[in-house]
Image 1 (cartoon, rainbow, N blue to C red):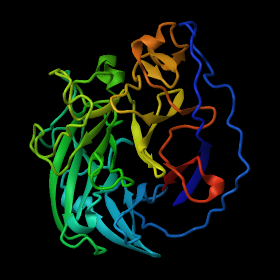
Image 2 (cartoon, rainbow, N blue to C red; image 1 turned 180 degrees about the horizontal axis):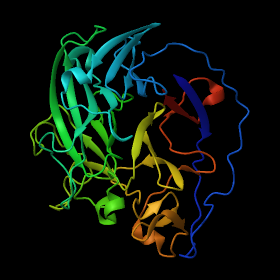
Image 3 (tube, rainbow, N blue to C red; image 1 turned 45 degrees about the vertical axis):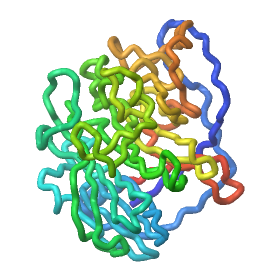
Image 4 (cartoon, rainbow, N blue to C red; image 1 turned 30 degrees about the vertical axis):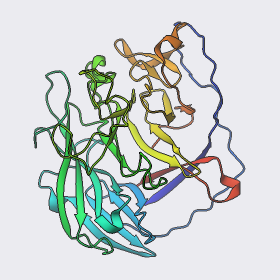
Length: 383
């Protein structure tokens, strides 16, 4: 396992617009990111077991603490393994391939065991949540494309309940929370997460956020990627312990922005929308109402977005602070039109183009050492 850490400073400054639609832009952000003066030495710590042949012995996707006071860290492998790390000891906590007979981590990069999230009351209720993929039509999907398209893959959110949350090996039960069908094996559910920086009584406490990509549906038909009657391209917010959803397996919080909009064409689960491939989210410990979302771009721009309730982030009409014409060519961008403010799109607080890096895989706001406060640490795990 190799670990590459890159640090990008949040520049929460205003962005100037006003360009009209002209010729395509070949180099959207010509200025390079200047290296900083901070040097971070890296040391080998633990070696995850090989789960496949060379050259990719392990496909590590995400690492998170349990937030239960134990100090434990958990680690996921796209091939289905979940590890518990206590100090310098790593144990096999659970294996999704043992539980889900239809589990797949092939054929595309969008398949496998993508993420997990521990409920804030995990120490007492033993509940955590995972998202994995299964072949198309493996189960009855709660959501899917609004056009008749062939099913290639399904993302499944599962609730696990441990008999004893303190054990290093899982023992307990599972139940399905929701299932989404996709026509292409890309940009599905990549992240599930709780805001662990708020306390009981806060409207965010115990609410599960679900990052739902566009399923690459825009490549099939751009109309699939920017609408409020579809879960594609959205950030969902649900109460996993509730039951008033259409499938009865979760709750739809009354504080969600579209619950009471008196429109039968919008989904109450949607918290924000207009994302291509929302990959990871995090909160600022110093201001837990500030949520940041890393959105992987198409061919030009990678984004860090400050998430606003009900906000529209523009995909597939925008990529970063640029106009996208997905119907003609979704690999190029153009200046924003003169009437851009009429659309009320929200734009990234930080962005970079592919001269400086490729897919933005995630990060967090660091509030530890004084020298690093205000920095976003981007971590890429690669087997």
